[in-house]
Length: 272
Length: 245
Image (tube, rainbow over all chains, first blue to last red; front, side, top):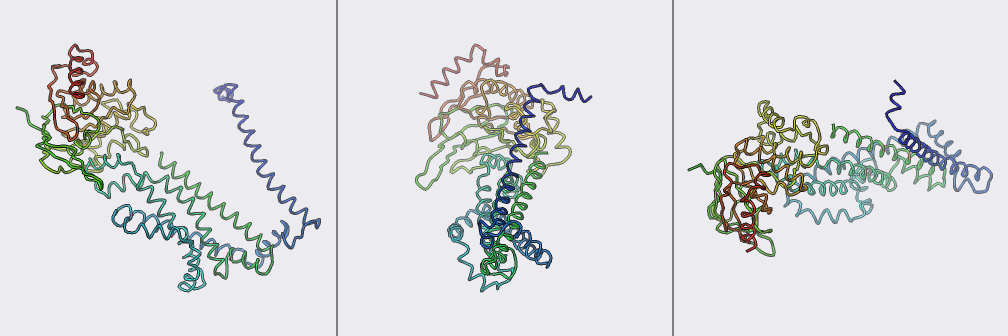
């Protein structure tokens, strides 16, 4: 039985599969190797006193810092605060962004009227709104949430609107020739054909949400990873700065991979 | 005298852009009888697609009148199948749009697909089908709601030559055996001759009907056989001259 299975492929194809596997193994070992090497050199040079660990920190000090944050219970508190701000901001920016994009697709007049406003808000560096946000929303999580939404929503609107507008004109003509209403065109054609753009928008929006939440915490905050970084910088505790940055890397990568996973699930369910 | 399915009566249509207004059609009059296959040929840019949009009721004429008895089915250059739907789900789109998505209607559409060789592909996605099969699926989709008039907007022009001959033959067979009224717009003279009962030649813009010919192939409706028929080249030369003269 097993022999028969192997027989299905030619010798050449088996060699091809083996080469492919070896190549992947090589790439992965280099990826991990670079990380180990960097941390190794970092640790070694600081341990030997060639560079000052007070200025550049070191892997062991970082893990020590993370461990002590974990012990006094503040690790999950700060991670939780930032994660909540980022996820909530992401969800609101995406949800509201898609809704507004739909409204702009629906009404040409509305789109024409609002176009200059969207262009200006898009061009404006959102951080300029910081003081206003603090005065209006206070210094708590609401202000940061507001900043996160502001940073993400315009991109979400523009991205989805251009996807909706790019819907195949001939397919719209076809549906209209069947007597389709605008709502039917939207539901049967515009929304399903914009699914790939929706996913690519999510990938961009994830990055925007992190920018928004960390930027918000830089401006005003009493908790969160952005707060730890700013606080650590002010009191010259590089261990804290590096630790928070490292955690941020892991979280941002994790969230991005969740979106990629969602993409795979959606594409699969759309195809089968 | 046979019943008229579609009638253009002194139709004028003007296109407006900011820079100019263009008269696409003027004093355009013709009719299509029930069960008849009419082909319209014309110089490029003479407003052929406008004419079909007017016939389908997607555009309102600026002047004159378009009369339609019954419903229209529109078939475009490309199949325009939705890639995220299976063939089965694609051919019931018009039923969903017209809120006729009942089991009987669905069964009728499926039976049509099976009858015309798509039975094995109902659960396939459009990307898994050849260009010819896709265009056939597009025709079945057009026929799903049992329209009275078929409007064909150069439905074969996006196919390669070999496939085009085959699909033309398929489509002709299906339309004839279902007894449908059809209005075909094309720039391909030989396609018009091989398919139609009657050929209308449009003028340059603003379009009106310059010549009308009833083709004398009698009972011969098979497009490939027509291409071999003795009268074919004579019609071709005549229409060529009228189109370019």
